[in-house]
Amino acid sequence: MILTRRNLLLGATATLAGCDRLASNASFREALFSAENFHKWAQRGVMARDALAPEFRPDQISPFFRANGTANPNTPAYKALWRNGFADWSLAITGLVERPLALSLAQLRQMPHREQITRHDCVEGWSAIGKWRGVPLKTILDAAKLRDGARYIVLRCADDMGGGRPYYESIDLFDAFHPQTILAFALNDRPLSVANGAPLRLRVERQLGYKQAKYLMGIEAVATLDGIGKGKGGYWEDYADYDWYAGI
Image (cartoon, rainbow, N blue to C red; front, side, top):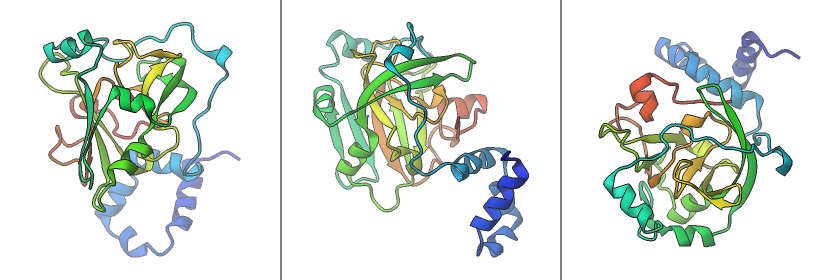
């Protein structure tokens, strides 16, 4: 069966039975059927909530996994952390949580983790297959105990993009709790290199590479993306009009 936009919209109409009053509102219709929201709804509408991105065999791992985006934040603060083997680094979990946390790299490595061999697809047109090891983001969020108002997870990074504008990204709770969404500390059975995001990076496997935030410093649970950066949900979304939802 070929899934056309018309078929998907008909499916969405059936699924949204009982929402007629909302659908009659022009502003709601505009938001619902915008290109970005259609992309998000279409992908999620034809896939189960916990559907996994394809995983690969060890013999399919790429011989070289190039760096996406910045290859080194190169700030004084980051260089100091790197020189000390990230022993002084910790990941802050803040915002709408009942139990704020600060987790060292050693603590993260001791937590239950997941390994997955997946393909990284870059918006620039290249791809690579790598084996990632890390802690499921769900594990961290469960430990911090999200408050009822939390809707998004903002990932704050050490990279200032060379212009004093810190790199950040965000995902919603749907993707935050996906089983393949992990905070990765190893690539191909080795600790992350600087180029690949040391000491910790996000892997949200059903989205494009720019969503895979590197050089993580903090995670913040928020109710809205308003007032964060330019309010579009990420660095490239703010400054290059990339889509907030980059599903593949």
